[in-house]
Length: 219
Image (spheres, rainbow, N blue to C red):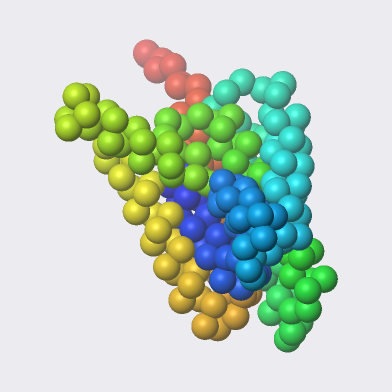
């Protein structure tokens, strides 16, 4: 889940810097941008954030419907949904790598599809329910880190996972920004690879955890 948090940082850097200041994972950012744009602030996008929000909500709704019948935690359906997210990113990376120019219709299409993929990822992460790791936002994580710290009167747990999530999404954003030097496709390709590897690793760990223990036989 922390690996997916890192990949979200990459995706949001690609979206904000390469797709006209649009977040495809951090919907809070889109709502703020949209509010300022509608208030008349100069040079802020309107269509992009709306498309990203709509795509994200659709992806989250699909994820919720698919996962509703199964128990919380990592299941086979979780693996498939994360795999779909990784494949979508890979396909978009190929498209952006092949098409030399990125006209507005293509950029908006990529924004919507990425928003859908990230909504699907967020819904799946929510179902798995790893505390303080939503993979797409860290505001609540930072709040928990500070409020539960010893300074806040708490015991400081689980500070390491929370801090790691915050650092990783920031590091991912840095990697995504650097990847833009080679083109939009590279950041998406990196995020796709990370997502697919995390999906496989998570599936193997969950399968091993729930595998029945063979009974020892005595002669």
